[in-house]
Image (tube, rainbow, N blue to C red; front, side, top):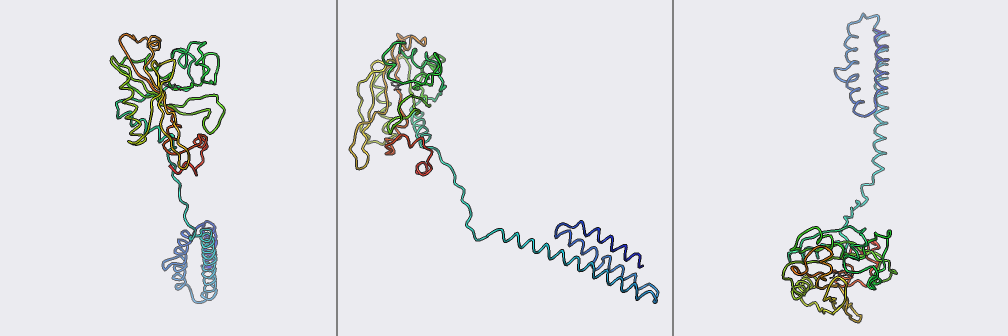
Length: 329
Ligand code: DAH
């Protein structure tokens, strides 16, 4: 029996080395020290041995029991200490971290609003590429190579034939080349101009182009559509005026101004869009018969429109990604 006791001890030592968490420690306790555990079994066997062996074996057995008990207790204490240390790492009184949820940029919100107003007026939405051919951006829109109107726009050229589009009007060309009238669409997107950056102008901004081509489109319809848009976007009392203007791709042409009255400052007219009846030369360039079809077009600057609506007086703030500004909308 003495042998069995020392064997048990080395088996226990081996088992003990495997313990790495409180749960397996508890299993070990039950295996050795439980009511039907190994130690109890040894005590049961102990009853059967001859009297003269009892003293030595009893001593050895008690030693084994105490040994197992104290190893168990040591490790249990160690686990408990670890646990409370870990708990100290969490300060349950700290306030939680609030996740900030992003919001749509003011320009995206404005674009979405403009799109939904024009959709309700029967317009579809199309987009075109920001890298455009010189032909679509100028030539097809009736700006000949040496036309002085080309100087109106300082352009980022990529090479002789390609550029960053200076307006969304080339998307009109793409649409008219690829589909048959009637066409009633708006075309939102980014445009680029090589301008000095200031409170009023930036090298990049957004426009929404509009085009309606059919057999009997009139200037009165153009005005009616734009005024309906203005009233929905700015409110019924919006103050506006149409002013005769010039664009190579429309004839007649006009600009639409909206009255801008910043709080505490002097009010003034702010130009929000250009518009007109599609020039017959443009129709010829895209293969539409100008004897059969007429159309109107318009193009508006989104930043200006948003600035007018929300009382913003510096365009640059729209490109700053400053959350203190953006989170107000
Ligand atoms: N493309 C012009 C610009 O960027 C705006 C414009 C004017 C667009 C008249 C049009 C239009 O479609 O008919 O200044």
